[in-house]
Amino acid sequence: MLAGKAQNLANRVTKRPVFVMFCLLLISLLTGFTFSSPANAQPKYSEAWHINEIRRVIEEEKQYHLKQFKERSVATRSAYARNFGIQATTLDGFKKELENVLETAWIYVMDESGNIYDRDGYLTTIDINSSAITTLQNPSLINGANTGAFVRQTTFEGFRGARVEFRLPTSALNEIGGPGTPYIYNGLMHRLPGSSGFFDMEGGLQYSLVHNNYSAFIRVNGGVLRFEDDSRLGTGTFPPRFRANTSFIHNLRYEPENLKVKYYASGTNIHDQHQLLVFSHSRVFTATEMNQLRVRRVTGLAWNNYNGTQAIGRIDIQYNNSTFLTSGGSTVSFHTSRLDQWLVNNIIYGTVDWPAARITKTPVTGDITNQRHIINTN
Image (cartoon, rainbow, N blue to C red):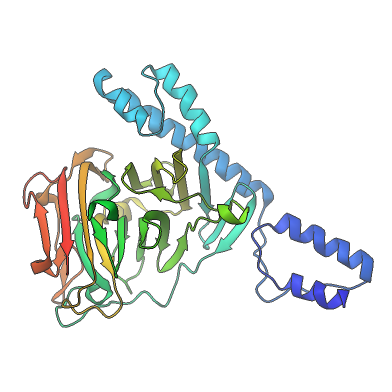
């Protein structure tokens, strides 16, 4: 009986490999049972890699935010610090408190094979070469049109980052509703699906219609990691959800100096605590490829087999202080002159409102650093 239980334990995918190895060794000693490697065994990894990589990410993030803080005027430094729950106004004070924030942040690192680790070790593997990466459209010839209603704002080539601020919409103010699932995210893309060197990463939030709050998610080349709140189970692998009707910032960018694509989300969780999440993916782009990158801001309602006529809900969101990061490292404002429809073979892969009759944007053209998106399909 113990041998049978041991085999079941060996075949189970877990998030804590050290604990599992201890259990397997103990049962083996008690029963004499020999374990064989299951087909779905966790990938071998260097214990030093994930520990060192997380330490590197912490230092990189510290230097990134210190630089951002320094470049701001004295009058706006306090506002930047508050984005991370920091009250300091001086550089030394901000640095000290930022170090504390990063030491308690939820940090995840992914290698080039899709293996993901947190501070405790191996977490899971996502398929970053998913066969699900296909061109999806209905007769409207809009890529992704049958996945739901959305505002998609995609840049021309030559941009490697997008940062936006907003207040998380809430059903309590009639700003959000189903049955479609609301999503708010940024994206970074290199070339088209099926092309050599294709890469597509998204980082953002998925709204819960049941709980009126938000969980973070990452999508890389079709592979998805949803940071579902498991704190109620006592495991604490993923962060608590972000609370609706609170300020939020997310930033998705490629860092050529570190050879990584990073996403960070900063906001207030459901326990009214400031929360920082950082996801780092090791990825190398050549100088030529970096100049071919595009970024996007997306507001959407997800619904399978959407044809533009179903009543799938609404979302009303006000974006603020939105900026793009150019391939050369300059920060520029969101502006419609930087957006590209990206029409290839009569299919729109880039900027589009779908369905246009159900979407209102204010302002419509020009500087859209601060822009309101309303999708109402009801």
